[in-house]
Image (cartoon, rainbow, N blue to C red; front, top):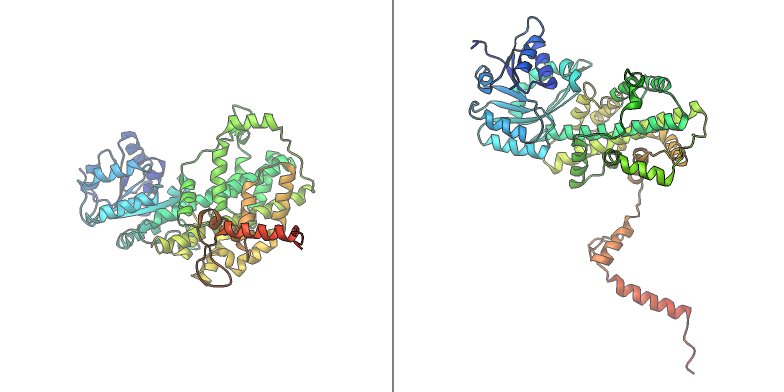
Length: 491
């Protein structure tokens, strides 16, 4: 056995785990990784940069005993039972004050249980979101650690070294108490779902509504990425349209199935938003549309039954492209607004103390939802740390007012052309409701009190009220009848 003591250990040497570890080694840390698959352990060593200290092993005990104390161990394994299994397998070998990090996409509820469970044993446990995919893990991801503050201080220098950088600043920061790290990553993924849905709707309008081919689509998205829509998702979208498929002798995007998959994090965002509660309808729609996409047989049957015929958009080609760009920009802001408002609410309701300014700051680089817009949001939170929704920022309002007209126009065109744009519609619906001083929910409150005695509040005086609506309605009907049909004079 080697006498070398390693700085950091990794459990799970899939592409993400091995890339993260190699990234750490490139920054001068001595690293060791464990995987039951000997081939993966060997591959880790083979791919290490010359001059770095990297080792792969096939038993947990061998890894743990070669780590410097107090140990720092990270796992990148599938969420759920595998995480619990790793923890139980580690316990015989680790000691008080060791740090265990779950870098996978665990549900924050499970993370909180693990934090409390290991805290009783004197072990520090951190839930940590990692975004950026395989390339990000190797070259610099956005990292969202939360939980034990003492543990964060122990791993902070390492994580800052391997994270993405924006303007020299590391894209990693302490996300808050308990399971805050995984909560922030969950909401990040919900926003990701929503933006991807919006981009797909813009693509549908450009392709079926205007008739752009893949080369033209690539050009449009490339141009969009040079301006205010600049983002990772817009960038990769432009590249997707140019990828050839050798088997079908066509562009690959045209032979990819329209049955979308998911790993559940978007669904968690919707479910937990309802629990808080906070409104995230664009994320909800994005999850629903992925679900609906899986009903391919039913959609084909419905198409045969209703014969929907997509109509061309009626405006000028370049004008419509510009309108669609503005609509996408507007709705993307709404996606971020909904996700960030959820984090604001969770920060207090779940006692996580999430620093929204730091969240936006570390999302600017390395992560899947990085975009130029985040610079604007970062400035807004620096100016007002108590901002509950970025729509309340004067600068954000200025951005939206410039695009609102085109979003409404694009939705109208899509409806007339029978192109589904549920995400864009939801974004506008949320915006209109959020900006409305009055909503028709007074009627809903009256209905609830009528059929279920659920009570209501009034706008003219304080208190909780209930009305015997049926009795009032009967008397009103009787009075109305008497007025309309007066009885003849008995005299």
